[in-house]
Length: 135
Image 1 (cartoon, rainbow, N blue to C red):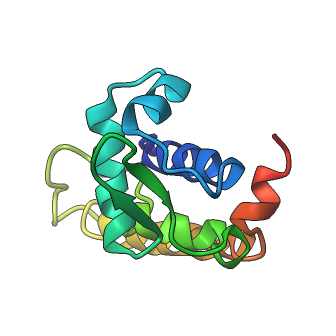
Image 2 (spheres, helix red, strand yellow):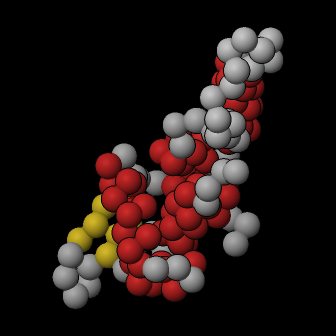
Image 3 (cartoon, helix red, strand yellow):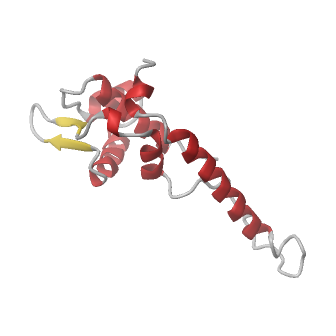
């Protein structure tokens, strides 16, 4: 199963797109998501690492977008949150003497690579600004 990291990151960035001139606190963002602010700060750290957001400290501190939402695609966000979508592998090592067991992980790897190509193909044409217009 795909974790909610993409959804959390997209929620954070959508809020920032709605309020582009404001520095939003992690508490405010967490309130919108109904999650712990620590989880928000963790994702903000990843966004800062990719130069998507900027932060300031202090009484009026918080985080905002560092670049226009029109210049950020959903593919960019996806690539920041996932190395590769994986629907999982067997807990146990497959039997290498079995015709299926010896090839199953290799075939799953190929399947997951194809899934990622298709996901990115759909997300590359949607900007964060376009996504935000639906709110």
